[in-house]
Length: 495
Image (cartoon, rainbow, N blue to C red):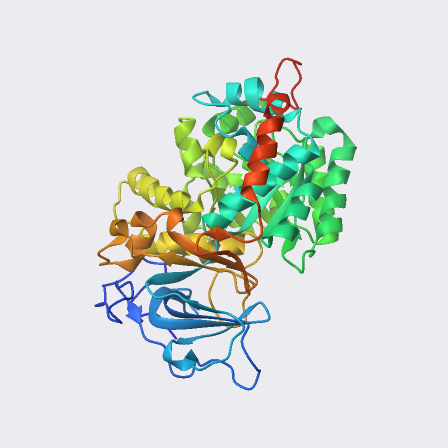
């Protein structure tokens, strides 16, 4: 199965999409440009017994070997042993035995979205620090409150966050926070996939860095392989050059990636230049962080002089963008997606924590990224809906080190996918399916969420988490959690 040969691939080193094809397919299917039929050789594997799951009658977002996207209509997805076994026609699976079947007529099957940078337990602080500049947000509210966190608070926050993400079509997330053993336990139980890192500051002494390493080694490839891990220094402005260099060495020695905040905003870059004679990216380069696989959060303070350093980085380098928070903080710049794309650095989608973003909705991040990039570049052709979908799927999977595991609905990859209902009035009619998905559909249109072939939400019903119980207990704990009368805070923000 291949998308139209006329469509150019979106994303790094790729050109804008070409002319539109006429839609076709069954009447009840969502229609749109570049609809594709299924090639006859892509039939469900026979002789293996019943499938674990068959999803039938849907439209499937597909990628070819050049990572161009297309849409296969009247299609079916066959799942065996947690993997996509085949993507074929609905007719081909009509008589295929299966332990479970989902009739997905009127729905689109997409690779599960990936939240490439968040602090899941911070949902407990949603709406607590509003309408504040960055320094006051950290120093007056967030870091004093985080000094109260208990493991139970973290667990409840993680449970609520995972429920929110599953309902929004997020199947995997990259988390950077505290008490991460607790978060790992929640991920293992609820069935999601995650890249987890125990955050640390240099103010914690060597023990902070050691705990980050111990966590990463203890939980790497756990939860049947759904949990991967990273070292997680907080940022160049809270972690010394010596600790960053030591982290880079540990990452090399143990084959671990690094996940940290870097050049979050332009003020951080200007302050770093004034104090250290180097931008945050230059600090990462001279401490060896850019020689290993690294996931950089935000990067709205990346300047032109940083681009050559990122272009020649020795490891896999990616930047996570979470545009809603930048708008709330009134930061003057956003992640330079186009410049990073031009040097081959993928930009992936994120939400940051709900304390700043107010939600964990990657669907919203996808739409905002497209719109803000158009305004920033003064070019309505950039960033297109197809490019936004590419950032949300393939690029985000590569960013968290899972490019050969998830990010596409393709035989041999893990069966992480979501079904999106496009029968609502706000998504009809469909002239361009990619545009409908990015700019008209919402996270509430996600009907079903599947990870490793396991259904975590079906017809909007969560199957692995009890939200009412979590909300009830978290509400009881909020007075102690949000108390700031003690005068403590976990760190000082002075950039």
